[in-house]
Amino acid sequence: AASGRDISAVVGFAAAISVNLAVVNSLPLPALDGGQLAFVLAEGIAGKKIDQKRQEEINATALFLLLAFSLSTAVGDVGRLVK
Image (cartoon, rainbow, N blue to C red; front, side, top):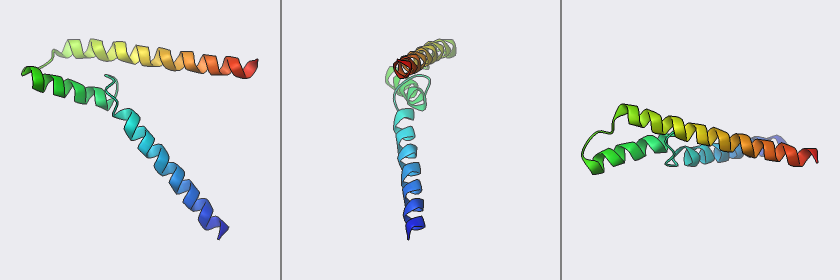
């Protein structure tokens, strides 16, 4: 009985992580899938294809900002743990 609840808890936790990942991945950030969807929608609205070089520049900038934000958050969290 207890092992059944344990397995159910693990499956529920894995499902929650999967849903969370799907939501975050769908955000319209250029480095994520939602960003690619935003490019497709922009191309559809504008009626012309966005230059590949421009897309790469936008993706690189967004990825840098996302990584910088993640790093600053991690440093802040570790700093609070050390105090």
